[in-house]
Length: 170
Length: 278
Image 1 (cartoon, rainbow over the protein chains, first blue to last red):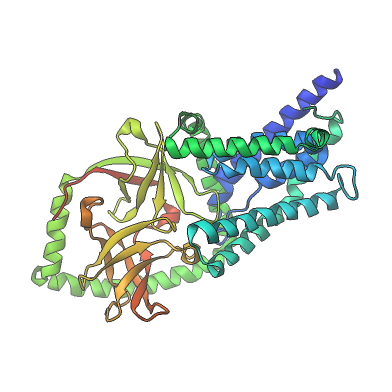
Image 2 (cartoon, rainbow over the protein chains, first blue to last red; image 1 turned 180 degrees about the vertical axis):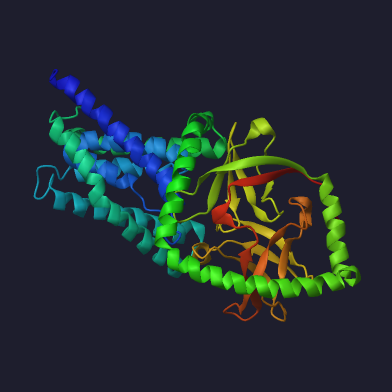
């Protein structure tokens, strides 16, 4: 094993590669499956997992970077601050209560989805002139489908953290 | 306070908020900023690769998940084919006498003026709130925002929304952002084709602002009107499935089945030039 900073760099590289795979999965694979017209959202879980394993500040930076790439490619600049916020929020639970545990991750993942769908509903009502009755079924279906993927997504991030225990430093 | 911002990472969130505002302003000032265009170019090979792999995976998944539904659908289609063959025989007999069909044929003659650009579908919407597709052609090939996109049978797929160097994105007929003048071929009534969130997952769109006395029936063909000269006229949008009154009762709207099989699209044609038909 190399020095602590070398380990941290390796760990960050693995997180980035894994998150890129998750992004490809969501952007170009899951949207081709016929899941009732619903596309599960995986990126919030990637940011949540890293934040819970690494803490607030690394989580916020990781969220910012992820949001920057995802936002520029999917036409949603708001993803930049949203993912940074998720990273800061859930990173704050590290080493507290259930922080860093699998049930804790599931709770935070649920929180991420609630924030995402809630924000989308508010945006649609306030700026897009959509009807709540039309939006709620889609938000519920998207949230439900997304949560079905949440447990699976935690595993590879947790394995990276177990393999390389060095903390990310920002 | 300073400590809180440093330790908890909320300083990063504030920075992210400022970055979000900057990117939003940039993208509104420059509809296609160089960074996004570059990302589009860089990810082109990834899109092509994953489209191939995902296409195969999706076929396996969809076959397994929907085998029973597909069997029912096959039986339904067989009945439909038999019915349509009967209808087709009747239509052929009346073809030369039918004034409207002559007009349609004239319109098809005019389509010789269309300049097409063939493009492969390399990506699809990555969320549940819109219905867009990404194409393999962009500004290098003369594609421009606002160009209409059709399938191989001439059925309307959507409108080019955004153009990169070697890619472009299309707002399909199902997307809530689509809005296009249309005309019912049989009756000559006009309306606006719109996407709607509640219809999107059912692969349907709507024809709005129809007169309350409108006498549309299931199966009526809907074409683009071409009014205003922004889009070509006479492109087949879809067929009326059901007709409903609005809550106020002043107007009616029709639910349309798009003529193009949007989920199955692999190859499309961008209409780069067309003659305006007055």
